[in-house]
Image (cartoon, rainbow over all chains, first blue to last red; front, side):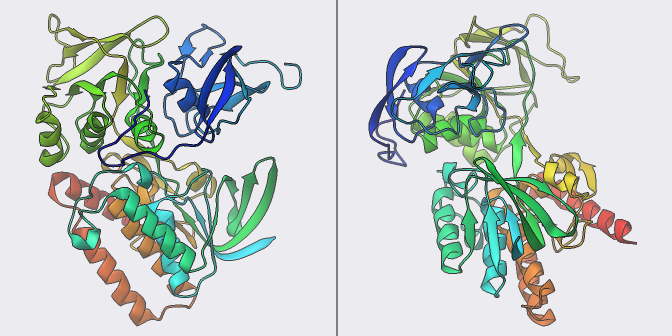
Length: 105
Length: 365
């Protein structure tokens, strides 16, 4: 899903490749890009399931406004993955409902 | 507490232009933005802008953003990123959050340039992953170099829907169709023509009935609407898409304005509830200004002009600009603004702005 050669932008600058885990699976992304972009590029669309109806949710606004893309990152719930930069070794998990209570994950 | 002559909220085109203009005449200015990068939505605008040369037509949004940033830097404007303005109170006090700390600052004048958020339309399946805002598609492709999907449907044939459709083609996505509930294309003909020339079908008087898929979008059912906006039975058609982009308008992000007790007026042509403001972009709260989409949905070019007008008014009220110089500079900007409000949509926005200015007058009496 990555754009390698853009007709207007040319080569889009990207950080070095880093590894992280998604629900225990090892994936790679570019350091500094939003976590959600690394997931999208790896084919992951579902970020969380809602508390009441367990509906799947993913990226909606991509600018940190709607909070639909929140996940559990390094044990911390409700992290807006569309505006949180990816770092090497991050542990990213699908969030169920409101997620684990901080500190108890 | 840190004190400034002007505090701008938002480092998009309006906030930066306001900061630049005030700083140019000597004001001490800070700009706060909650994002990691400045420029608001400008750096996603990879198309050439419209208007005349004075509106920087022919230039792409990211170049305009870059030059605004350079000017701000040269003039000594402090731009603070990853800084969310949590509150604005009476007397020019603001609360800022950076990471896990919260601190107050004081602005003798305040410019609120918080922009807008995207509208959405609800239909069964609209919360499925794969239904995104058109702005999200733009952010993903143009800023991060990631395609939002392989094959998408664009809902909305206004300028945003048209421009983003073309940008998705440039990003290497397929655009299955552009639809709009209105009977005619709302955006500029030249944008529509570029998309149509790529063979993308346009369906007018068409709405989404349902998005299909278990945990992400796999298809969509649409139908024609009658003149009362009701789906016509038997006109349903389905498309295989993995992404549905909603380009159905924007609404001003007025939370901070309302917190500051700026009076708002409902003006549909400007996107909904809009803070009343006068010709100087000053709200019903003296010393509090608005510019850009938060003061009524228009375009980046208008946002820049409004920011300049607000910056000039701030410089004037702080005593940095004489009455005559201010009047001359302001006239030039207002003239330039009139050049951007052509056609029936432009007229409706101009009328809306007049209504807002009258509301300020009434509130001050």
